[in-house]
Length: 224
Image (cartoon, rainbow, N blue to C red; front, side, top):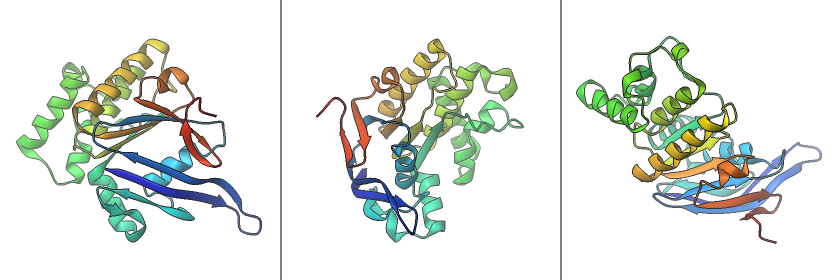
């Protein structure tokens, strides 16, 4: 599903600084990896490159056989919309839509509506234990519930790749455990590939593999 090879990113023109170089990663259906690293190591930059929100200085990103470097901005937007799901530290739930409508946004953007959309939304809300909150306004939900809405929204359209950036950063410990468990379970159940970027070792331990991002690429957590 996802193949990253030799990914390199630099910033600056007169004296460019290399954030990281030579990042390699392959993820298939059901693979779930956590990426850790020191502050400033480029974890969010790596996510942005994989999502096609930024362009690398070298290397390539392929998703479902599509090389992101060959796509223009419009094509990248369509690829993200159809094949990627995102979960962030900030929930990004629209306050003027109820829970079901928030979860159904990716389907609406893909032109999926009617019974098919309602069935998918209901199934995802049930999977994240929020079926009884479908008509609730976001202001009526706790932080943990809002993040579960975000997980349902990230997966409702059946993406190939789910990218999660510090998804428990705003949650208490109990809510974080619930969200991390649901995120892992739903990535596996939906056959997606998942990448979790986090500074938390507890969160990272819920993934199949833990990797550390360094200036020279990704390495197994704890490896020399």
